[in-house]
Amino acid sequence: MHRALSLLAWSCAAYATSLRSACTASHIRDSLPEDGYILGVIFDHSSVTASPVYNASHSGEVFFPDATINYCNITFSYTHTGSDQSVIVGYYMPSPENFKNRFLATGGGAYAIQSGSMSAPGGVMYGAVSGFTDGGFGSMDTDFDDVFLLHNGTINWPSVYMFGYEAIKEMTIIGKQLTKTFYDVADNSKLYSYYQGCSEGGREGWSQGQRAGEEYDGLIIGAPAIRYAQQQANHLYSNVVERTIDYYPPPCELEKIVNETISACDPLDGRADGVVARSDLCQLYFNMTSIIGKSYYCAASTSSTLGLGFGKRQASTEPAQNGTVTAEAVSVAQTILNGLYDSQGRRAYISYQMGASFDDAATTYNSTTGEWELNIAGAGGEWVARFLELHDEDNLSTLEGVTYDTLVGWMKQGMTRYMDSLQTTLPDLTEFYENGGKIIHFHGEQDESIPTGSSVHYYDSVRQTMYPKMTYNSSTSALKEWYRLFLVPGAAHCATNTAQPNGPFPQTNFEVMSRWVENGIVPQTLNATILQGEHIGDNEQLCAWPLRPYWRDGKTLTCEYDQASIDTFDYNFDAYKLPLY
Image (cartoon, rainbow, N blue to C red; front, side, top):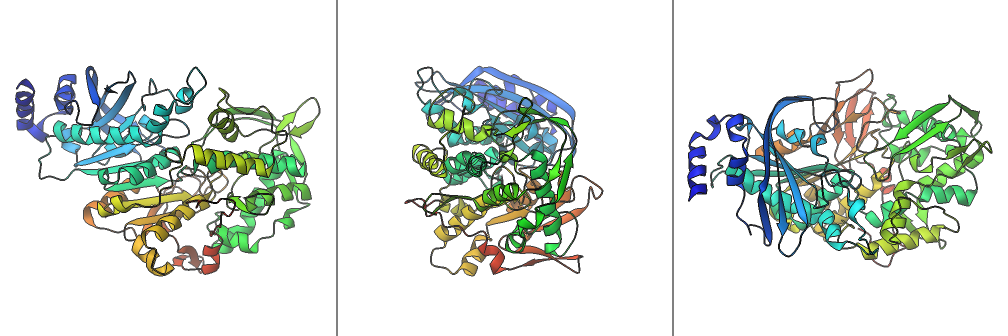
């Protein structure tokens, strides 16, 4: 009775209520769903925290424009019956006058299941409650790989399934009900539910579309890490190429190859702007051997890298480098770009588009010998060491004896072990489609971490599964009514690209998605903005796959159908007996 009276008193004020009066622990406790709202979930009311945040300024982000926002920052925890695992969830609640009947679920990056303040403000600025979760890993600062192994060296399977899809789903279901009660949303009033994330966050988005399709009206998915078994082991492919060819190129030599590729392939889209928008034409017409003999120079440097991809931070000190591009370096680069084949010539996986950097192939300098040496890519090394061999290690100590067939074997092993959890490639999206859901899926054309073709292949898997009896053009037209894929010219992994600064990035996806879902405004092209360099702030539009960009007279963008270009993204993974979606 007390809870009902409290809610009634608050709802009488409704939107006139101020953020300060609404943002209290007692009001949050009264707004929580009943225990058992999700089977087996019990809320810890004593864990509730609530604090109003005013004039929080966010700028320089790639996934949402600059904004200053007010919101209620809340957290609380819950448990599952029969388990002592405590799950912490957090929500940014817009001030009541700015709430627009929207809920946004967000994900993380690498092995983090949430990115908190990096993602949540992008919902609040558009009037959405933004939610995130720690997955039950112990804290918002604890990553999945920290809790994956139990002390006896066996897999912590509950954490795998929470990371795989369950935690985001629970956070969304709880958050939607919390939102309705907190803002007193009428039963006959629609609460629109969205998801937005990139990389691991993109995989988490697909986990929801595939396993909780009825919960969402719109998914915004960037460069998703969906094909875990292949993509993680694939990070080691560049290293195995270097070992097989027995050449370890200086980073500056690989950088020269990338820059020359960009220079040669930039104008193939009809406009010279330093951006490779048509990596497909680059693949068809550019011969990388033309770079052999060109000189390169890089000054001495110290660098530290950590991105949204998988792997630990790595620091390196490099001496000044100079020389000419060798045939061996071009062979390494071209073999990497060709993708992984087994010893029988069967394709096992794909690689990055031409113009992408060769981060996985980065070598390390041995100051004693004066030689460049193998530097095992941490993303792939940890995957094999921890998730396949079940050792509590962040990387492999050696690749001695590792061949292309070894990589294929690791891919098959991971695919079998994690097919129902991390291998997030189910192509039947019927439930999501029948719920009226919409999808904006984007991927950087020069992604150096997750191959761009990965997204194209999944899109095509969905097309063939959802519309198996239609022709290619008919099924593509049908799919584009609710699912649109956009390749982002020049973009790196979930980010802009310093090597191609004039490339645009789709920064306003939530706004575009909400207009599509709520007002029926279809994004025929995707809005994008140049976020760096001399053209910062300029607007561009991105073509929806399978149409490809071409600039007539260097000035007018056209989205053209080019079968030869489309065919470069067509893959037959015949190294596997089972379909690889």
